[in-house]
Image 1 (cartoon, rainbow, N blue to C red):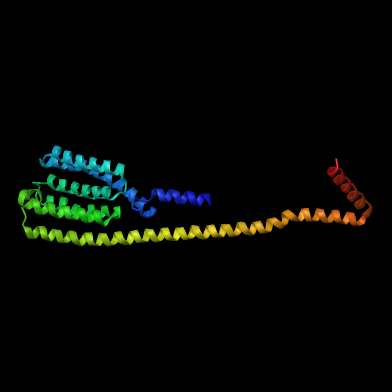
Image 2 (cartoon, rainbow, N blue to C red):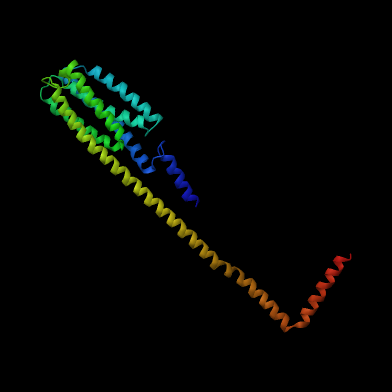
Length: 263
């Protein structure tokens, strides 16, 4: 029983602040750790690409480093909270946007090496098991493109862009994020079902253990009292075989009681 309670306490401690199941919480904890490492590591090849293409790699590192530092602080304070998950999803998107900027002036490589990467990044964000952070990251990505086609169009597309081109990309983003959100729902439901099955198994094992303990006690009690009963039977048998001894013992016991009552 103490083992079962300790397991339940450890699982409750590993659950999220919103009361999420411990399996989902552990999944998110590992995902936030790995994706945060990925955020920081991606800045290195992006900065190298910017330097090779003749763009500002120092400014790129400053922007990415400040945002990723904020993400790191958020994860330290709340490893699997919604704020941390949103920071990570947006931070990975930021890496892609910085890469698109780093590839400015490289022609079609900006399209193939930059824009296609964003879809891979959102697939990584699926590990967060959070459709809200996916939607936030997607919305910011689309708004970023809508804003830059008017402010700095060459930072987004090598040959400039128009509203319809950005709208087409936005539609593709909506399609991908909708499917990922459905997968998030299914994965969370499977993890919760596995947790319910495990809880039912532990409950069944506990009931079986208690039943076995009760049965063992029922078997042990007769074995405990049988020697005493046998000893009493032997004593009574001796008294029956030697009534004189029984009479002497009864007379002695009566005298002891008499002396105790009248000292």
